[in-house]
Image (cartoon, rainbow, N blue to C red):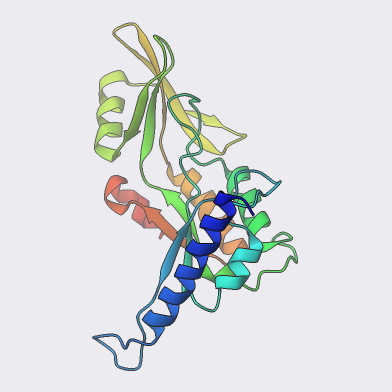
Amino acid sequence: MDSGSLTKLHALQFIKELGKALRSEESVRNANHYLELIFVIPPPRSPNLADYDFGPRDLQQLSDYVDGFSLMTYDFSGPQNPGPNAPLAWIRSSLQLLLGGDTDGGAHAHAHKIFVGINFYGNDFVLSEGSGGGAITGRDYTSLLETHRPYLRWEEKSAEHFFIYSSKNVNHAVFYPSLMSISMRLDEAKAWGAGLSIWEIGQGLDYFFDLL
């Protein structure tokens, strides 16, 4: 067993022990309710799971000790590879790898414990003059819209809206959630019987809450 696999084994054992300890402690507000543990997990890196990836076997082993798994299905792209924040197909494939099967009859015994990560932030990537850029909030997004009056485009493959603008002769690509993109991800989570985790609520636009 390599060092990465051994580290993962120890980490998962720690989560088990932590879950046991929290379940033995009564909630301060409700004596009949134990303290809950939500474990944040990364999405699988590829269909060929490596030993250090968090996979379906790990999900099954921890299920009795963890009350929920917050799946970080965002940050798909970065300054070095500009693109969508959370392609819908990637979210779907991550759920398929973790839960097995598909929404039409796969084994979803633990789906109710999965909280599908949905980003309320966006990204403003530099497309020229090298790479760069990073996360933006709703306030940044509306400021860019007011300043540049860009044309919003729908990217069918990722199911995300984006726009291109130029500032000081430097081209930028902005990917930010929309009502349509969020709605499609809510439908995906619902189809699997999963919940939601939002990163993070204060970074979105007010009308995003109309969908929740």
